[in-house]
Image (cartoon, rainbow, N blue to C red; front, top):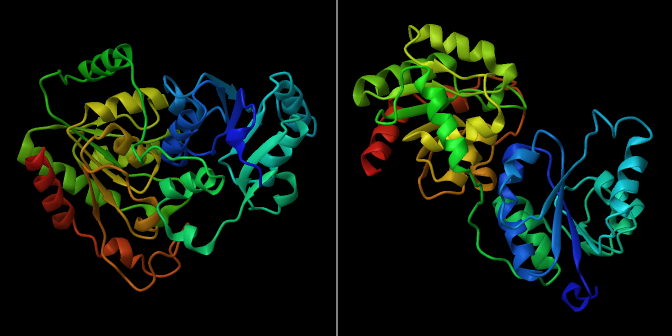
Length: 348
């Protein structure tokens, strides 16, 4: 494998992962790319729903959109996208996404140097193919993505996550809260009861409601519920259980609005989810509730995060829905999470 640093690398394309949490976890690798190629123009290719995570990122020069549901859909989609990328004359593609498709697009775009893991039967499409060793499958995903660069003898630049807000976004978040009677002087606790991929990752809504009432009585904080459009009913249910003593933002904010609101929170309580990693990147104090997923590989990368979990023999199963009795979540009581939350509030 030829050393990439010995080549004339002036234009780099980074292929982003496709989910919000994964995208945030890759930001240390993106910063490392900038460290290794400080003079290069770095573009990032991302799906529309994940691109906002990279807005204002100081290590990226340009964000390109892969709109597979729009102008890049159908049989002509990949050739069309590849043709657009070919015009950019990239010297190097760094494929953080593991799919065969990511490597195929880089080949069709005429990018001469293509770096990535040897996953999804794409080894022959890569010029710098990094062997995914079994040990890398149980490291934290921050280190997993850094492993792509380190496998090519490129330097890393720490593990700190990057998520940058503007003052205008922070001001807008305060305006959203003010509409619900929450001022800049009020304490704010956010809960995130949903999670994509399936119900196995979700702590019970009744327990989120009971926890929120206890924390509200303890701290006097306003409670805000976070979630995507598909979780609006979940937010409504928890709000009803609380006697509507909260603000339900489920399905009512953009991703960037949610990010700014999470930064405003003094405490964030969440399942293993994309917004968990948002809070970690913002250093918002948080309690992360883990059941079916692996806290070793996907734990929030922030010293202000605390994990609540009860080890059971069948966890982590990584299944979308529990096939038995959901004991990994049933064993996590309201009192456990409440005690952890109060302790974290006192520390911060």
